[in-house]
View 1: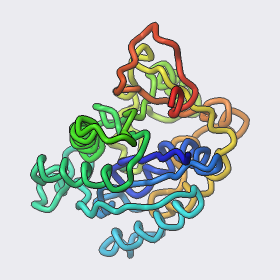
View 2: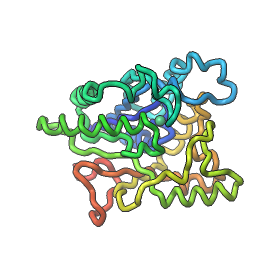
View 3: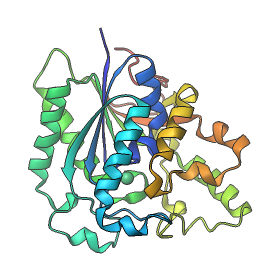
Length: 274
Ligand SMILES: [Zn+2]
């Protein structure tokens, strides 16, 4: 039977910069991959050369997203919320912002999607949103109860497992050391210099699932490059080529349901045991 995977992620580019390797790998293995993107990316920063497209950023990003998903493989679902912007962005206060929408209604939107797609496995951002982005945290806040709701309905198909994307703090420490060597300030990363890398990263004891993405590496790179308005690179661009596959050859997850606790056997496949 075909396995089905659904991810619920915040912005056009999170599917590529974040877990693009996992998505590409499973699509290549014949898994029915579904990629739900919650917001339109309208509050994202704009890369050099894209300044004039500021007002139509959402439209530009949707096209980038469609091309990226075509490369990764999978079916795209747009949840249609408005990007809330990063911490302290004036967009936080926009009445249409994702974070200002009624929580129960947003949970219902994701629950309906889960019922429609019938995934074996669902994943979303972790409780810190990876780098404390309010839209990422909102995805966590709505997908967790949506999964529990549909799971409790007792459908024969599932959903069977819930995961959160995870970035271990051991890796952050390594990145900080390398960035310092390259003359970068790790407390002021990103185009708006508002991302403090020293506040990013989870206790590795929470993380029990490590996915080898080498087979999906090239697709992740190509899909990421489609997000030109967002710089097209992600963190990997800061590192010398010979280190990239070593440092970025895996994507890691927290298994929230059934809960993985430290000492349990580690997993190398989101579908393990199914
Ligand atoms: Zn994002």
